[in-house]
Length: 446
Image (cartoon, rainbow, N blue to C red; front, side, top):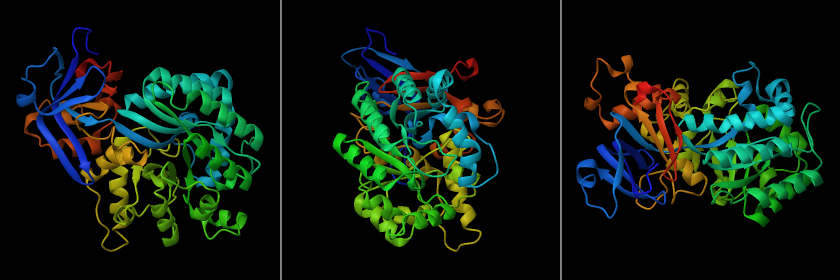
């Protein structure tokens, strides 16, 4: 952080962002100037803005060959599930019963609080600055998660699971109690930490919620102007069971639509198996989508038709979806988003390929648009909040760059290396509103 005598912080390196889907913008020897209130003061070539006379001194961070990106945005993951990543080989519903529901039942008391406290430093270590998260039905560990989120300094949207029906293995809570606890959490945490923390009303999915709970969730979210997050059309088996449980509905999406759950503040995880009517319903209501390709591949759920959704105009961001996703590493999710569409090309004709620049957009400005925050984070514009990820270029190079010259790499080269080789080993520092929320202890990175 800047000292009291320095009103500006300067970061120097290869500055890269995507101000539009697929458009790569960069300053190879660039700089980002951050004001004392955590805003981006200026961005551009170091030789031009680094030598300007300013009203107060600039403390420069110039740690060698680095790439400077907007902070990564994870629009869908689960706090209590991180401890059971990479478990099982089953499909969604069997996997939930065997691994996830037992883990969520245990995410309470002292152990739940310990895990909640450990989770957020792991997020920041990945270069993630903003995340939309689920906890469990238990208020004590959810409260601990919010406390840990506030302590972390990160930008967090989070909510306790709401579940009042479903299979016997599922943890559940009566609607009246769940609604009361949700409103108590909203009163305490929605808008907390100077607006960095917000609440997401979180019915798990249609299979674990009664009609009454779904309707009440929509009412609570509307009353308090909260986000809504849930899951939609992750697997064909899930869709078939929803059709059986809600025979009056046109389709899975209609269940949420009829209960007032669609809209610009709603984030729907997965959305792989949508028919044309459902796609149009999401588009008409400006409902957002969380694409979780690592999780979809792990559970054999399917591959989202990402290029088709983009062409339609749906707003899409990326989610790690731990624990179905094996890591909190959004670079890995970007890579899976690219490779899953390439896999479609083996058996479908004319599938557009996803470029690294398009994947980066989904993990930055695209994610910001999903959260309704495209005007404050996600790209490098003057006046936006300085949510930033600094990556070591030698750490993503073979031999740590000892036999290569990082200076010879283009911005496109550097981005591709981050997408295919990036991860926490290369994250040097993570900033939210200009404040460092993670700094690597690895001396080789500095």
